[in-house]
Image (cartoon, rainbow, N blue to C red; front, side, top):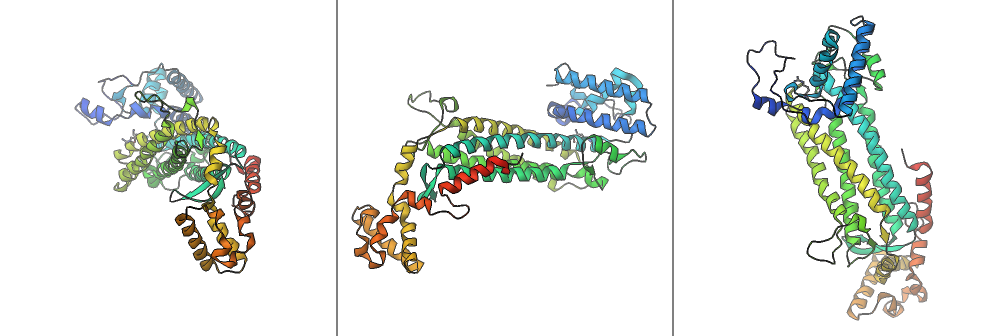
Length: 463
Ligand code: ARG
């Protein structure tokens, strides 16, 4: 956290006769949060300085002293020894001013053919790229935790729900694999976003490039970019890549929020399908019996922030004329918040899922409601030549009779209701058989589920 300072900012003060008001400094500074860009700012500056040397603008000695100076600043920031100044507004000016203080004249040459506008665009792209790689890894770890639980409960039968009403039997494994699918799509979106953002804006200057031509491709290559941006105005104004990342983060949050909601239900006394460990639940200060799924609730709650951060950025950019406007500085708080929030959310959910117990007996009991096989009963009639709409009607009547006479559906004399049921209708009421016959790709036969798990474990999970 930077110390407050009233020192005059000398970096753009040439034409100004008055000091900047301290309220304006407080209002306009970004160093309290953009200090986190420092490793990227330093990498960008070193690549830029090397291009300056190669263009004959810096001697080898000057370059060497800039590079060494930047490395010592990097070490000082990393070790917490660096004193940030709000009077220097942002990370770019804090580093540059300190470099010049440390190494003298060469430091003052660094900003040649560069603006903070292409500099901040570069730093932010590098930051997003690094964070995307971390999010990909963290998401894969959560998928692995889900896969482990799915494998252990590939054949643990539960009701599958629509409208939160019992629908048809599935298994815990199948249910959890649905989340593995969602997260894999989220990773694929992260990969798309990474690929699109991975171009270098350096050389775009304030908005119109520069009269001093540095080798943009060489700078890009040094920073691991796959190429350079093609329009200096777009490069300065573009924050699409942040919006895309915030969207992917918000959508991942929405997926985790849905998972949370499932787990919250599963952990109620009413469902009882799952038990979270003591390490991942909290108690009540009043009700001694309580064990609350706070991690799930916070995951669900924090998703509001993730969606809000996306809205925050979209609203901030929607009315901006080309190119840079100071509004764009407001891109970073939502970006950092979303990245931090999702990073922690993924980690805590991974740990919680790994330790989650599934209560197989309770699951089976809930799935043993014969009503879950009403659709299978209609399918049985269809196989005997009854048109589906008619079969649906017949089974509906049977369901009504079961409810009216308080008789379980599988105990009714179905042949007495309609002869087309045949003597073998009772065989439908086997959960084992119901699952076994769901063999089409994507359906929850245990064999299918185990095959899916194998496929995920043997290469389908993208790094
Ligand atoms: N701190 C600024 C930001 O994050 C850096 C760019 C400032 N550019 C300018 N023309 N004032 O947007």
